[in-house]
Length: 308
Ligand SMILES: NC(=O)c1ccc[n+]([C@@H]2O[C@H](COP(=O)([O-])OP(=O)(O)OC[C@H]3O[C@@H](n4cnc5c(N)ncnc54)[C@H](OP(=O)(O)O)[C@@H]3O)[C@@H](O)[C@H]2O)c1
Image (cartoon, rainbow, N blue to C red; front, side):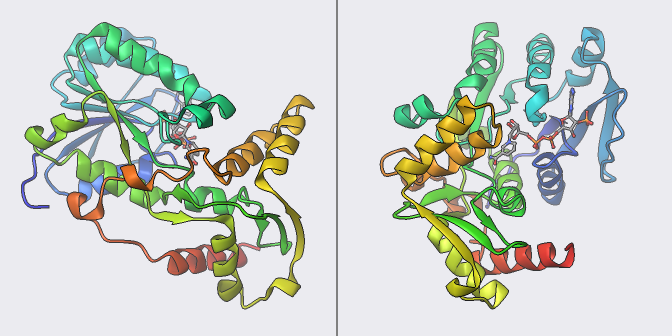
């Protein structure tokens, strides 16, 4: 990436799952001033080079002071703390912060059929609406699909490395997915663009992706990573359509894991927007390398087998 612009970037949740790789990637550019805003009671640890400002998100004076002079506010709060964005967005407007990156980091917000099935994206609309209504900051919404490594390690893709059990979605189509490191690097690269280029993403979504793969592709890669063959696994098979119905029934019965199953089964269905490849912002544009899918899978399998 030839022409870069340095920025003053404040980040909330900068020690979290996506926050840590984002901070690391921002610092790696060597041109940005990074400030972590964190709760008074937080035990979060940040790398050297990060200015830390701790306080209460109910204290407007603290937030406005912490945000004064910042070019960007990145919000990367945990799922259960999304409403903490409200005072932060309001303070960003009072401090005149030009860019806010709200908590999104999910699937394609613009795909109607997907958003009718999955509530994950729609529930975050109100924070963008708040930014719009205050009329000071512009937002950029990050679409990254399911985080590949995060979901793989939790066996959320229907394949359990430890027990060698898999629930295969027969005929499941490919969906976009991103590693946490790719999300961090992509966001840092985006925020290093000069204003003339960054302004093209104003009040819109930007699409990041590491891989376009099906659950079957993941399973095939696991064979070589684990030196196993299909007959070594206990496999259940179902079509994504039927599996989505089963996940909805599980949700109706109060089983929270149904939401995870509904996400992956829906992304694997034909025509439900899991594949957003055509909208992905290219590695060349961001100056990033293509990751090696099999290498990522092998690394994750090794990590999981070591922790057995
Ligand atoms: N695509 C995917 O597969 C996927 C998966 C999971 C999450 N997400 C999304 O990604 C975003 C970030 O999630 P994450 O998993 O990275 O977050 P996380 O690691 O769970 O938490 C990030 C930070 O939130 C702050 N926090 C935690 N509890 C809080 C509370 N009660 N009040 C205020 N702040 C609190 C903490 O920062 P301090 O200690 O510094 O205050 C924490 O380090 C969310 O929008 C989430 O919905 C996407």
